[in-house]
Length: 193
Image (tube, rainbow, N blue to C red; front, side, top):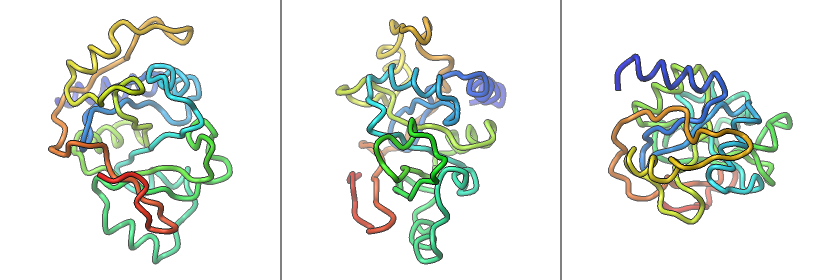
């Protein structure tokens, strides 16, 4: 990944685009979490119901602060011990956090990513990003750009005639499954790694 590629990906995000990019375990699909049109287009690409909610990734906790209530000091210590890293935490969402991100929940799934390209993308964009696995519902997550193209090359909908606005090439880490999800209030593992 060159700085030029990173700028192109961030530019696509700022213009309401959907991009694919490498993460800790799989290729992710991402967009601006505050752009309802982009999020709904992403959900249509995946054939994912809005009620399920989405994950946000960030370069640091400050990029997530607009979306979640501040954890108490004990909870923050527990979370900070795993970040940056492949652990996604369910945190209480702020009241103003859009339903298209939370789904049918009062929590939001968030992660400070350890993947250098994903973190650099969040820095270049200037905030948190939607991050969901790059695959249609029911299909295995893509781990290479070619698989991303295979899944989405022929997609079109009433939102857009183009499938993805940009694919940021790079390597995913060696994790073979999507990241673990834990409930920050209880510590319970919701989705094992």
